[in-house]
Length: 440
Ligand SMILES: NC(=O)c1ccc[n+]([C@@H]2O[C@H](COP(=O)([O-])OP(=O)(O)OC[C@H]3O[C@@H](n4cnc5c(N)ncnc54)[C@H](O)[C@@H]3O)[C@@H](O)[C@H]2O)c1
Image 1: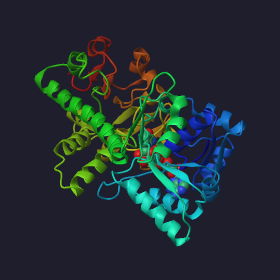
Image 2 (image 1 turned 180 degrees about the vertical axis):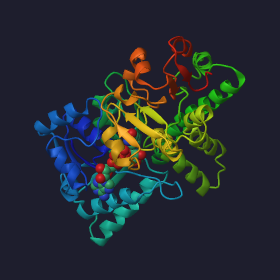
Image 3 (image 1 turned 120 degrees about the vertical axis):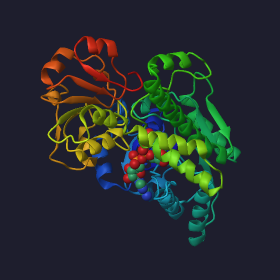
């Protein structure tokens, strides 16, 4: 099939590369010239396991191409994915300006029947707006042509994006036309050979499914974080509690790890956007508001433990940070809890030594420039003469570090573990003062 993907970011690039991998001809279009020129040279804008390989292979085989010419992409494809960002507007609602700008451009160049696929996460009712914008554009050209707008939200996880796209748990297709439903089923069939995981539904249900999924996962995280705080106060251990409740098949073990709060490009903005949808429809979003509120407080929890231990004036003190990205296996720093924690430490007068296996280039772009932040290429070098270590992102390489080496590098052997990576008893046994989430 001939496909174009407009917006070559996280979702667009993965979508384009994986569709090309199945033999389709894919044009990835983006209005960011630098990004497109880099992709043509083989330089990817994101770090994502396995993505390099399939982008390079499909580009050199000629199934995947890159352009800034959206018109060319529209003219040469029957299916056009819109995969641009939908960042939060000032009030938290999803900003649709990029999606609608692409819809206008599609209308400028549409020459025959096309399927326009909303891949971006968009509020319920957006497909109707996209159709209106395209109809308006066609009317301005005095050109009549049939088209369908389909909702096909993306559920990939950063850090496992390629795997998730190639072997999806489900493919949601929201459409009201049999013709587009069949084309979309055919397109996704190669990704669902072991079992049929394609779920067709109404467009509005498909749009809502994406938000409901992310809000559910965010709710689980905020829930366990609140239970962790209670465990600390009441002398229980949240790891034991997690095991206890996770064994119930109705609950499960996933997404009930306590930590320093959720971040990334999706959960925070999607929960906010859903709250705004509730607001606009006069639904009192009590649960969603609480989920967001808990998460905002949770991002401070590790810092509050530092203050309890050292006092509120941290001037002259040095802290090491292990892990910057919002989760392991990605360099994405969007809404990362590390940003909040680092700002709080800096405001309290501390100096910071940071290490992350892949996210430091991104971190340098987004952290407020400060002479009090030093970046290190080695996790142990970042520990030299620090008063304590804060573990924020649970990269594998932090799971079983050389504690003797750590202890001899640090000024004082104190660890604030935001991801419960170590056993308190063991760490105390080897001479560390150890603080974690919901276990002390
Ligand atoms: N990142 C994720 O893990 C993830 C997962 C599922 C869904 N989503 C959703 O997918 C959408 C895209 O997210 P992302 O993380 O890929 O965003 P991104 O910021 O990484 O990429 C968006 C791309 O769109 C391009 N763009 C913007 N306006 C354009 C225009 N008019 N024409 C051409 N290109 C344009 C930008 O230059 C950028 O490269 C969002 O709605 C997001 O919520 C993201």
